[in-house]
Structure formats: structure tokens, C-alpha cells
Image (cartoon, rainbow, N blue to C red; front, top):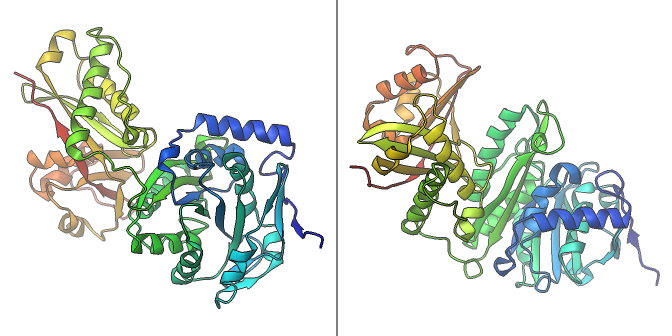
Length: 454
């Protein structure tokens, strides 16, 4: 019997149609990504835009796959062209790309066809790019594997989770969810929205809405089941088209996330273990810049390679001597701490650059930030009622005005009234200013401080 082949629909548009060119592009992106095959994930969320836009983000996820372990991929992506009720299977026997054909898991497809939310709909698959763009990455990241593709339309997270549970199986099966994040916002607004979405994915909070992720339906299904199974999630990459090949006016967001079952993931370092490492990175960075020692390579700790946002604060004899940081995670945490330490020591405009003879009298504090969460108070009184003194860091934004205080500032400004008044002044606003267009976000920190100053 002749095989029914689903031919590539977006080769030459979303990715190169020429096989050698496609291989070279994929292999370059995969080799540049941080690989950790010993920590092979059970599930991934990856973007599906053109490779020049989202390929590096997708590669951050695919680089973690163990090519010899994975033998079956269950791939879910949202429909963009054909309306579907539930989840649609194709009529094909294999999917083709410029790199060859991928056989479909016919037994797995038959095993879920009885579910009322699953149907056969070949039309939904013919032009759908959300599934297709994942295949070349899989072909270069894995050895032989079968594919169970599902085009996801109108379905509840429980319906998606039921399908995933039915095909979950063991470590030979990878669950792969294809989804971009926010669409067509200005760069800074997209960063804000995508940060909220990433935090929801990391903490498995549903529902994520389609304004946040075009693949919200399959993402919510995975989060529903992952939460039930007690899985852990890691953010591998978060950026948008303005960071890659697009302008900053109307960007699309991309995130890569890995999900691990409890026994499969190596335990993350404890807070007690992280503190000395981060403080050492900060101090070594400053000392090397001052010529006190040779630059040191950061420790080979996996958690340092994950993107994180940090602030580095310097105190001399108990007084502030510099404080610079990042509000959004945009680079590996170890790099972020090293860079912010240098900025706090030498580029805080409120202070002269730190001198060599000051370093021994300076205490360093590193604060690692959670993803900022927006709050929508109707007025200032409501905002003050929502704030948690000693817990919340706060970001105020209005037009070109922007300011933040870390939670540690509550020690000097213990009341919400004082805290907000000084925060407005820091951002160049009057202390009694309030406008409904003002944006407010809050975050928490894990803080690590040394006590070396005299």
C-alpha cells in the first residue's frame, strides 16, 4: 500500500527548503545552545515562528534532548487556518520535511481515537506550520523516532490533559507543545506580558489566555497534567522578535520551557548553597576589574546558566555605595550578577567609581528577583492596601518615568505611604501623583548578603 505523506507546507518560508542549508542552520543553533542531555526533559514548550526569529529559543529546548532515549514524540500545536473542535489527528502515514520523512505512531493514534474530543481532520494539518516547524529540529536532535501529531482547536485544558495522559508512557516518549507567546505589542510591553506568562508557566498556573500565547490551549493542558503529576518546570529561554530579526514596534514573544518528572531532574541548589556562589561571582567580578586578581571562570553550576534577574547592592560602613540591577531575566543568572556587580561598583551615577582601597570595606548583597507581577489598583489607597511591607519590591511606570525599590527598602521606609512617595520621587514624579495609566508591578527577592565591611 502506498504511504500517505503530509508534504511540507512552509519550507522555504519559515525555514530553508535546501537540505544542506537547513542542516547547517539547525546544527549551528543547536551547537550554540546550552546542552544538558543527562537532564533530558519529559515535556517541552517551544516556539514555532520562522527560524530567524525563534530558532535560537527553540534550540535552547532541543539541545537538552537525549537522542538515544527519545523514541516517540507526541506533538501538539494550535490550529491557525482551519477551525477544529477538540484535537485533530491527520490521515497521513508520515510527515515529510526537506530532511526526510518521519513515520507516524499509528498505534498511538488509534489508541486515542475513541476519545470524544479527538477526530481525524487531514485539512487541519495540510497547511499548519505550528507542527511542521518542529520536525527539522527533531530530525537533527534525535535518532529514529515516531510522531503522534495533534492539531489543537477549541478544547478545554481537561480535554487536552486527558489526551496527554493517555499517551504519556515512559521516558522514551517526549511531550512537545508548540506555542509562541504574545503577538504584535511594542517591545517593552511584550516583555512585560511575556514575563507574566513565563511566571505562570513556571508555577503551572492556568488559565493562560490566547492573548498571552497562541498555543494557550495545549499549554494549559500540559500545565494541568504537569501540576497533577508534581512536575518541575525550568525556563530555558525568553525573548522576542525584537531581540533577533525584527524591529521593536510590533514584536512576537518566544519562550522555551522544560518539564521534569520528580525523579528525573537533578535537584536544584538550595538557597544556602546559592548565596556563597553568587556573592563570590559579584566580588570576583569587581576585584578583577580593579586589578586585584585575575578574572575567574564562573562555577560549573547548571542553575547559573538559566536566565535570571538580579540586583547587586554595595554598602560601605553601612551606607549605600551603589545599586544596579535587572528587572527582567534576559541572560544567564551568573552573567547577570557579574555584570550588575560591575555596574553597581563603577557605573551607578549617584556615586564615583569604587576605588581599589574601598573594596575591603565594602559589603555586597545579591538579590535574585521573581518575575514582576502586575497589579491593577483603582487608586493609590487600594495599591497601598495590596502591598506587603518587607516582602514586595515595586515597579512604577508612567510614560518615560520608571522607578523601582527592592523589598529591602522597607527597612528605611516602613509604611506604604512613605515607600510609594519616595518611589515616585525616584522616578521624577510628584509625591502626590496618581494617574489611571500608571503601571504598577511587584516582585519578591531571594537576598544573599555578606558581612565583611569594618
